Structure formats: structure tokens, C-alpha cells
Length: 433
Image 1: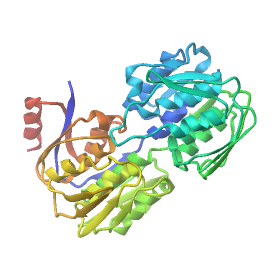
Image 2: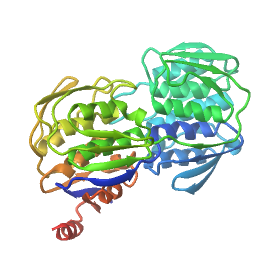
Image 3: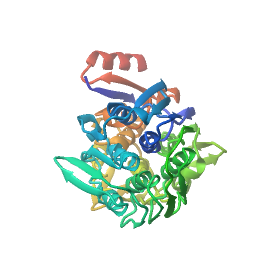
Image 4: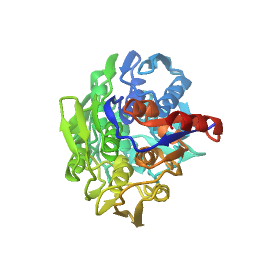
């Protein structure tokens, strides 16, 4: 049975919330963990669906996976028997392609199912394949599989035509055990790229310059055991920051790296929210209605595309006219129709949303079109007058752990119920009153 959230809006969020590990860093790090024959311990792992699917795939090729707790796992890649990964669930997560770089780097061959389409637009993998070929690999795509192999991987000078997080990580994985030096130019600079590089270095790789647009990799002959803790998730943190401001609450968001949140903090401050930074926490509060601004998504350190639906939802409640320009993914405005059902006044022209702020939302039945838009609709429902239901929450659960639980601890009134379970919905309404 599919689940949905039922939410009674109108309560300011107050209290403290602890942010989990970064999903996008964890996906790259788990793939990298199979590149040594020694045991690797990874903690601060987020317990979300994407992670669990990838761990199942890693187990499926013969690696030893020992889940110590929901947030810690031991992986040993010495028992890997196959370099072919083809089953349905792996196609659903984009990051399955990191196993290509990891297996190619370790065994000089890999065969992985092409990842399926993404709800927010096409994400071509041509830059990944360009990188593999530059390192000396042959790459063929046939029968829905990417098949790549090499006699010997050799370092090279690689210039990415577009800044790509996925390609940057995949090329680092493939190159870290190649002969000689690789220089990767126009590399992506996201925090999770730095985290994957730091993890590889903790296993004995030699990677310099991660976090800048030029990464230098000197190949090593083998990698060794490591214990590593994943960075906090900047998008989960940003989502709670926006939720605090939207509900006019006051929330201390713990276990974050404030530097990673600067683009989000900057926009919230600009429209009148109060953001206080501490060593590993931020506190966000708002008292009245916020004002308008312009947002344009761009690669790190710019405003993250993964925060675009959340900030647009907040601006739809703010005074005046705001614009949000999406420069990364073409289908990222699919949630606007859902937001309009709650009373938002937004026009989309090409890749720009023109937002006329309204004084409030009203509860409605909405559906999450993708992961981040789903989270944004939950924020809208927390503000809305009356009851809302959000379905297709399987998207939200791909990237947010215990979302309803964490929100309820801050005073939200929401519950996860089976779709069409009228009794559960009635019970919730009676309880909330």
C-alpha cells in the first residue's frame, strides 16, 4: 500500500532538529568503499531508500555488507564476484552509475544498467563516458547497459564540457588507481565531491584540489581500510531552514556545516528572516511576513537547484513579486500546479517562475512530483489553513529520513497514513481537533 502524509497547517515550528548524513555524498562514498579489499566502516549514513537500494546492489555483486545500525555500515569488497549490475531497483537511482567508475577503477571492467529518467529532467551521462574514454577505457551502450573495459587505465588531462557532479565523482573513482596523473578541469565543487575525495584519500588515494574547479589525481596501486563519517546533508538542513521561516517559527538546526548553507542563509536573510550561525548549527526564525527577492540556481557555491522548490514555496507566501530562475534542470517546475491548488500565484515562463506573493495558503490534496518538490509541498501544507494530504511520498522518502517524525518534534501536526485509509484520517482529525 502506498502512504501519504496528512497535515494540519498553521503551527509555527519551534525547537531543535538534528540533520542526518548527506545522501549525495553517501552514494559516492558507498560506491568507493568497494574499491579496497579491506573492510571499510562508514557512519553518519542517512537511512533513506536510495542508500538501501545501493547497498543491496553492492551486496548483489558479492561484496560483504554488514549494517551495524541504521546509520553505520561495514563494507568489504574482497568477495566481489561479478562486475555486472542489472536489476530493476538500481535503475531507479541515478547514482547507480558510480558503481561504473568504482568497478572500472578496481577491476578495469564494469557493466551497469543505464539509470532511468529522472523526474526533474534529463541528466545526460556523456561527460562520465568521455572521462572513462580519456583514461583509456572502451565504452559501449547496448541493451540498456553501459559496458566499459580497459587493458589498463592511464591518467590523462580531462576537461568537462559542463560542470557535472556525477561525472566529477565518477572520474575521480576511475582515475584514483589508474597509472600516472589525471587532471580534471571544470570539475564540480559541491561539498559532497570534497567528501568523496576525502574518503578516497582516507583509503590511501592521492587526490588534491577537490572543492576547486581543478582536481589533480595521482594514481595509487591499491586502497586500504578506513573509518569515515559522512558530512551533514545541506539540502535537508536547507529544507528545515525554509520550513522554520515559512511557518514563522524558531528552529535550531543541529549537525550542519554553516559554510555549506551560505547561499540559502543569504537569501533567507535578504527577505527578512533571522539566521544565526554557530560552529555546527544554525538558528532560523521569522516573526512576520517576509519580502521578495530574485533567485537563480547555479552549481555550488551558488543557490542549489535542490533547494529551488522550497525557496519558491516560501517566496509564494512573501510580499511582492519574486522571480526564481532554474538554470540546471528543465522540468523542475512541475510542482507549481500543485502549489496553485493551495492558493499560490505563480506563472512559469520558460525556465523562470514569476511569483506574486499571497498572504496565505489553504489546505488541499496534492501530490509530490519528485523528491525536493515533495518536501516543498509539505512545507506549504505546514503553513496552510486547514488540512492537506500529500501523496507519492515515496519520492520524499528517497532523501529525507523520518521526515514526519522530525517535523512533529518541532510541533508540526502530521501523520503518515495509508492512502484512502479514511479511518486513520478521521482519527487524526479527531485527535488534532
